[in-house]
Length: 106
Image 1 (cartoon, one colour):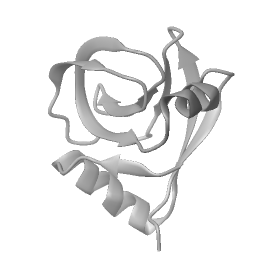
Image 2: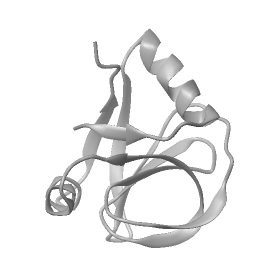
Image 3: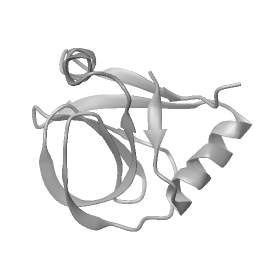
Image 4: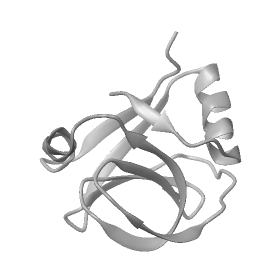
């Protein structure tokens, strides 16, 4: 799925890591509005209190990636947004655990 990435240090670090090989994350449904998974290492975080919306991708606690299909207010570092219709986001994320893969397009 296409993503519009933020321009920040955390995304730069993720892209550097993905440039070495795909980042594969096992995601789990949480709180009926998000999928969360461990990145396996810590990244630079610059958390701010935000309200997320469907399709938002954030860093939580420095080492977890969260993709939303609903809304939530918490302190996160913004990473990006899925560039697909809201209904497609819900369909992709709300039906059980998923595997997320971050790949550098060539």
